[in-house]
Length: 181
Image (cartoon, rainbow, N blue to C red; front, top):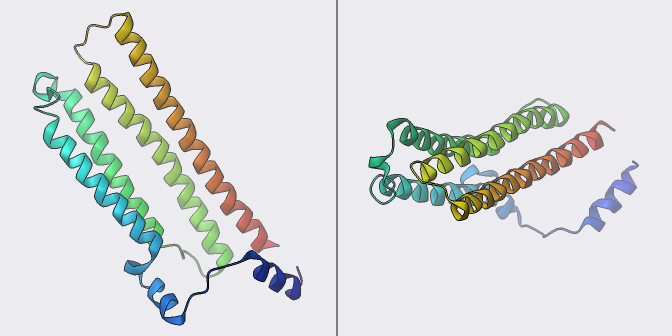
């Protein structure tokens, strides 16, 4: 692509103009709007999961469930929270190489591994929650149907999560291909 074509594409893309002060503030990790959103999400999730962990033993009869089922649920929640914190740290360190192509390539590798972990941990959490909630329940036809619906919803969420990650990865792949030429 010629320089003039690149300039024309840049100008046609449309962008929100930022002042030098705003750009400088965005370079500070704590001020970047995307990182602020991720931090906000993590705080909300930590509060929600903490509330669930505080209440699950009494409100959801965790005391009557076997120790291993309780442990499975707790470990799956803590694993998801740890994974989200890892994702935040991954988002903070976007530059992972000497050149832009190397950096995007390295980021793609880390993002791909993060996506696999994300889908896996979602499956583990869904399994732990379903195991916890359905333990010691006599399944009649209505409860069995409800459990089937819940499982279908979980499978649909996993499918959507996989599609989201594939879309993100394809965007990174297209970006890398554009840089290489």
